[in-house]
Image (cartoon, rainbow, N blue to C red; front, side):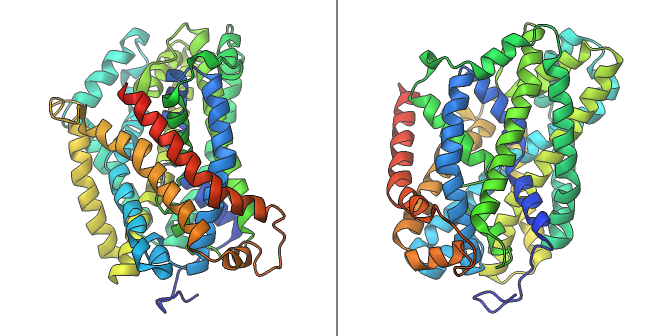
Length: 451
Ligand code: PFF
C-alpha cells in the first residue's frame, strides 16, 4: 500500500498478527515489573480501581484515536501530525523523544530479566535470604548488567531490521500466547498457597484512605505506559494496519489483553507475597527480589517456576521494546528518507549510550544526580509521569480540535461499513473530557509529589 509520501508501505500480514504485535507492545515490563510494585506502593486495590477506570475511559479512547490517526495518514507519529498541520509536528517529535528516553532504561531492565533466566540455574535460588543482596550486587556491578543490556538490545536489532511482517509480527505471534499461558499457570500456583487470602484482599478489597493526588497521577502514568500510549507508538502500529480492520474493536481487544496480563501478574505475585510474609511496597526490586525469594522456598519446583517467570518477563520486555524502537525507526524512514537497516543501527547506537549511563547509574555513577535522582530514575519519571501524559493530552486535543470529525467517523467505521455505536461518546470524551482530565490529574499529581 502507498502512503502519502508515495512510498510503498509494509503491512501486517494478518489480523491476528496485528493484535498480537500491538498487545505485544502493550504487555511488557509495565505490566509485570512496574504494575505490581506501583500497586504495592500505592496501597493495593484502591489504586487498581482508579487504574481500571483510567484504562477503560481515557486509555481505550486515546488508543482508538491513535490507531485512527495512524491508519488515516498511513504515516508514523511525526508524519501523521505534520500531515494535518506543520504546527503540530512538535507533538510527534515529543513522542520520538519519549521513545528514546524510555529506551534509555527499558532494555536495562530487559537485560536483568534475561540474566535472571540464567541465574536461576547458577545459585540464585540456593539461599532465599540472600536474593535481595545478590540483586543489589548484580545491578550495581559495572560490567555484568551491561553485558545483558547489550545482548537484549541486539535481540531488538535482529527483530526490527527484519521489518514489520517478517520480524515483529512473527515474534509477537509465538511469544504472546506463551506468555499468557505462563501467567495463568503462575497465578494458579500463587492463589493455592496457604495464606494467599491476604494477598487477594490487598488486591481486591478497596481501602481509599491511602489515595492522594499522587495516586491518581501514578495510575494515569501507569495506564499510558502500559498501553503504549502518548508517544505515537499506536499511531505507528495503526499506520501498518489494513483498511479492512475494525479499529475500535481492535483497540478494545488490545486494552483488555493488556489489563488482563497486569491483573494476572498481580494475582501471581501478591498472594504468594503475603503467604510468605513479605513487604508489598518493596519498589522496583519487587519482581527481582521477592519473586525469586518465593521460588527459592518452593524446592525443586521453584527452579521451573523461576525459569518460566523470567523467560516470560524477557519475552514481554522484548515485544515492547521493539515497538519503542520502531517508533524512532519509522520516523527516520518516513521523514528522513533513511533505509531501515541504517535507521535501526543509528537509533540503537544512541539508545545504547543512554542505556550504558542508566545501567551504570545503579552503581558506579550512583552519585551523579539529575534533579535529585539517578539517571535511570530520571528517565523513568520524566517519561512515565510527564511526557506520556502530555503526549496523550496533545493527541486528544489534536484529534478533537484539528482532525475533522467526518474524517474520524469515516476511519472508525471503515467508510460506514462497520458500526461504531459509541462514536459520539468517544468523540466528546476525546474532545472535551480527556484533555482537561489529564491536565488536572497531572497538575494535582505534580503538586502532591512536590509537597
Ligand atoms: N507498554 C510497554 C509496557 O507496558 O512495558 C512499554 C511501552 C512500550 C511504552 C511502547 C510506550 C510505548 F510506546
